[in-house]
Image 1 (tube, rainbow, N blue to C red):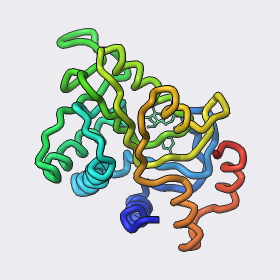
Image 2 (cartoon, rainbow, N blue to C red):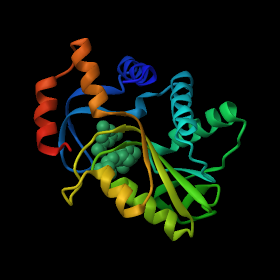
Image 3 (cartoon, rainbow, N blue to C red):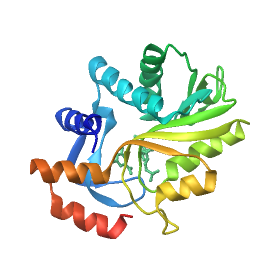
Length: 211
Ligand SMILES: O=P(O)(O)OC[C@H]1O[C@H](OP(=O)(O)OP(=O)(O)O)[C@H](O)[C@@H]1O
Ligand SMILES: O=C(O)c1cc(=O)[nH]c(=O)[nH]1
């Protein structure tokens, strides 16, 4: 594991973002751990999170035209990341996000921010079964733009409904790369070397849903 990944896990634990317990996921699975980026909830914490994402984009070598953050947690992620990336790379990439409920008045619709065109990078918090990424790909394609990749904080390394890995499904179906700052494997390494967390429950969960 690289130093910046260790630092990211330590920082997530310190902010209460990475938690152990029992959590119901979007997929309907009950997980013994949860990664809640909503708890990067001050200017300093969110600013630092944006810098991790900006660094990951720099290292990926991808050159998207637009950054897209799916509601809700993708909204502060894409906003903070675009500020951090502009500072890091002196490159002002436009960004956009969606509403979960279409707005019926004013400008209306589900999209907010820059219009979706060209190569669009999806910026989200985690991938579990891949549903959220599929929804984003649909929104981007419907707008006439091209999904160019996915950047997430955590790859939970789980299987999708098809029985294939969620990441494998995304990369094979949509022919786009997925970049994750950390994965479940990194969290397990960290837990084992620092004697924290509920390894037994995580190992059981991984046996059932992991890749
Ligand atoms: O890979 P998946 O199985 O789709 O799961 C991961 C998605 O689930 C959560 O979204 P959700 O819409 O639940 O939450 P939010 O409104 O808090 O962003 C999370 O933010 C990811 O976008
Ligand atoms: O799959 C999810 O719903 C999910 C998992 C996780 O670790 N964090 C999160 O915000 N959502």
